[in-house]
Image (cartoon, rainbow, N blue to C red; front, side, top):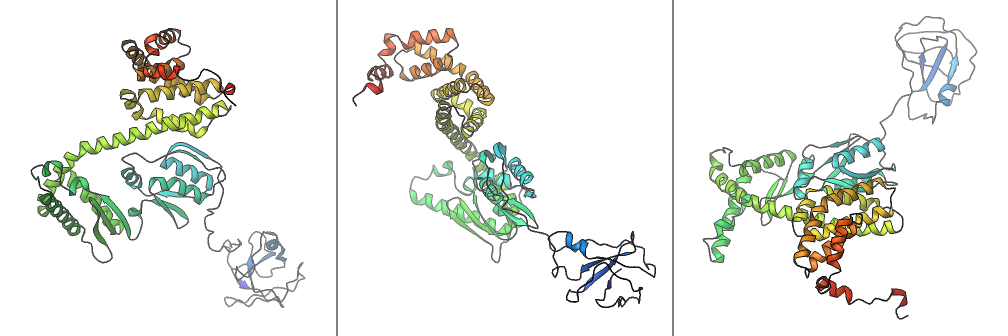
Length: 466
């Protein structure tokens, strides 16, 4: 029940009913200058009347103490008309905006994109939603690799900074929607968005189609016809009109500006065009036969290119972060970032491919760096485990290098591999003895690497010319 409490008299002027109460002396007087207040009667204690401001913005206490001061004791002569519970809570205004300036204290190590966002959500107290399909879009832009967070130190970083550092490397963005963080790729966000589609595998002629054409001019005309045919089919299927647009951004790159539902329709269309088992409608039959054949021809090439890029990225991690880890270990410290990146690299299948290829020397050197760092930091359990794992993985390559140096003592590459393997397996007496006999032999000294090592000055650095 609500009634307007008068300021000078004790009579209620509520239009719903006329009520009167006997004159009594309140424990606290009310100033005439205060705004009109609401009279709320408490069911549990009928002798208590709680005054709240009619306008919540006219009286905004910073605590509940002013609220308690507005309690006035009176005697109620007439009983309550309604026995329903009366809400005496302070009137609430609009919900506060999420605090994106809150500092974080966590360190992210080898987490998927979803796990990293969950960590930020738990620490910041904000709800974070990842739109379905966004990780697939990110993988397509990252050569098929699932977006992950290798190492990210968020200590002292603000929430909006953490979101940028996590999502931008994955080609994703975030926005604030109804008090929650929504992360998505641009084409899955609401409203018009622009996205570039790589359609080289289906839109452009393959190498087999260009073989019969020796002159450049017929090849150019073939490319133009294929591009125009594909562009016309996309415009017809999507029925794009108004502000939406489809155009060629670069050879094999299709620029599409459309709402999210049109982007989803285009994604479905591209999947159907590369699937040889799909039964298209009558208008797309000839185009589907061409695009499905081109996709099969391009599949092996695309797989090789992605594998080569991944192998190069993993090899760069072994070459860069190994020296950082060893430098920190020489100083009696552990470089957590370098250790984390090396843990990820050694678990990656690309490392096994590098061991089976021509990068055995790089990985034997990386294993030696881990062994030396583990000897310098014996209390670091993660480092000890990684060094043991790397030693186990490189042992076949070490035996192979020892056999190669035995057959060709003048092989400089085999010399370097055996040297790193012997330094890594310092506690293996049999391997070290066999390696020492080959490394110190006259044939090994006559090799390119042996001559280079003997040509160096034997005097210490400090004893050189000052």
